[in-house]
Amino acid sequence: MAQLLSILLLLFFSAYLIDRFAGLHRNVSLLFLAQPLIMAVAPLMVFIGGIIAKPMAPNLSLVTLPLTVMIVGVAVATIPVAMLAKRYGRRIASMIGFLATVFGGFIGLLSIVNQLFYGFVLASFIMGFSGAFSLQLRFAAIESLNDSSDIPKAISLLMLTGIFAALIGPELAFLTKNIIPGMPAYTGTFIGLMLLALIAIGVISKFEPPPEVSDTEDQRLSRPLSTIMRQPVFIVAIVSAALGFGLMSFVMTATPLSMHQLHNHSLEHTKWVIQSHVAAMYLPSLLTVWLGKRVPTKYFLLVGTLMFIGVVIVASQGHELLHYWWALILLGIGWNFLFYAGTTLLPLSYEPHERYRVQAVNDFSIFTFQGLSSLMAGWVLFNHQWSGVLYTCIPFLVVMSAVTVLRFVDAPGRSLPG
Image 1: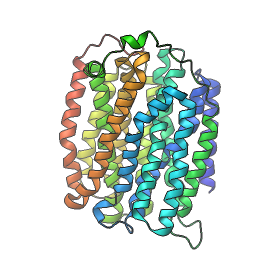
Image 2: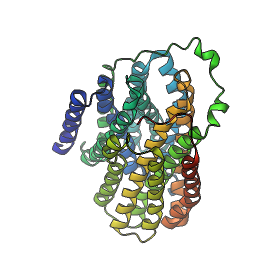
Image 3: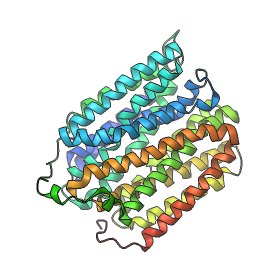
Image 4: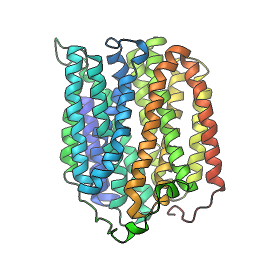
């Protein structure tokens, strides 16, 4: 308990320092505080979702279904998120969205108590809604800034919150596994998730809505989505983020099952690998805060792609603990660079009055691909083993390499700040 409380206190203290010294709008510190409390659901489900589902699932190949359906929930909610944000503003939309974790957590609790597999799947799907709202907070941060040159800093700081999510989620699961005597394992975990969501709702209620763009005249000049989507900068942005997310989810979803179920690594070691991976997803943001204004985005794409290639090389060497650990570290860093690049490039593809449509299309594409990747993970792992998971990544890495080359040869009309 002391360790989890220490993590939460450090999160609040970090948000306070950002508010005082980062030189950004106060909204950024509020988003920094609220986002990881909701994001903690994802690493928690990666860690224990398959373990909870295994004794309930009618077929072993379905053990990753709850995690997959949670990602589908994220994808399904991306368009409603944009519509709610446009109509009611980011604050109200986020508060509504975060309630999904409370509702889904309650259904998850009842499903575990009664050993209802499809009830647990439904709970995961509903909790995915909150994930869509939390991921849109990066756009809320961008819209709160007075100076566009601060975009790399704000995005990097919000990505950094994933470190806290990486620690909070698995730690909450480990701490609360048997916290309620006489109840099934992890019952208390979902009570903890509901409490975190309620805290996040309280924090986001203090968010100050940024001034809305007056788009009455501009709407007549809005370009068709097909025109926006044909731009090289949009293609690079969406493909780098989608492939980064999809391949990361594919390998990450398979890892706990491969380690704990197929190769008999302890739950403690599995937790360490997953926590290290999720920390590696966000820790590089300490560098991108500083490098964002100094290094062209194409180099983040290049390094991210090389990191993913490194994952396949390292993971194919064996099934020892360090093979998994190093592969998942590289996977996390590669995802960070690709998602940072995609998020930073995306605003270059649209005008302010086009933002909600383009953001919705972007996130829907990313999380649809991520959901499909997660669903494939269990089937590929149990039918073709760990090596099959790695070989499946290779064609997508070829595509990612081609997209990286496209960014190096493309010269868009606008460039990143700095």
